[in-house]
Structure formats: structure tokens, C-alpha cells
Amino acid sequence: MNNQQLDTCKKYFWNKLDDKTKVDINNLNQDLYFGPLDDFNFSSVADNVTNNIDEIISNDCYYDSFCDQILESLPDDLSEIEYQDIYLLDKKFMANLILGNELASTLYR
Image (cartoon, rainbow, N blue to C red; front, side):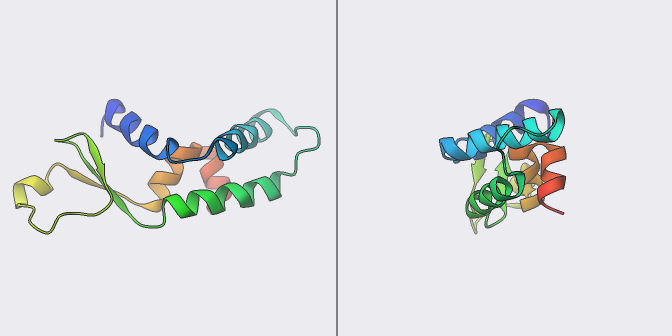
């Protein structure tokens, strides 16, 4: 996938998150990269974030590069040629898109 396609996927999943979870993800990254935040319970916030993300990415999804869209499931009538344009988005990949590599590897071991 190229950067534009990755951006499309990231925006799709990021937009599914509620505002509190987005703020929590930003705070987790801030805490992880720049040191502890005052009165911030990393473990508790991390549990809430992973629970919310797990609800969003409970199943594998697919990215159709020809149509530039995310598919929650694959149509049954795809031809072999159409399959060439489709990428599997597994839970680990989606978590990396949403959280970034470092935070995703910290929360999803």
C-alpha cells in the first residue's frame, strides 16, 4: 500500500473513535514519548482505549485499492482479478494505524 492508501485506512478507523478515546490516545502517546503526565494513570487509560479499539476492530476488514474504500466484509461474487486489488487489514495492522507502532506494540503484545 502507498502512503495515500494508508492515510485513507487510518482516517476511516480514526473517525470511528469517539472524541474521548482520541484524546486518550494522544495522552498515551505523550506519556510514552515524553515522560509521565501529572495525575495520569497510563494502565487505566490504556485499558479503556484498547477496549474501545477492540470494539471497532473486532473483525478483519479489507481495503479495496481500486475503489479506495474499506470493506467490512468481502462480497461473495468477486472475481480473481478483483481480488488483486484487495488488501487484508488484520487487527494488528488496524491497531498500528490508529495508535502508531510504538503505542500499538506497548498495548497489543
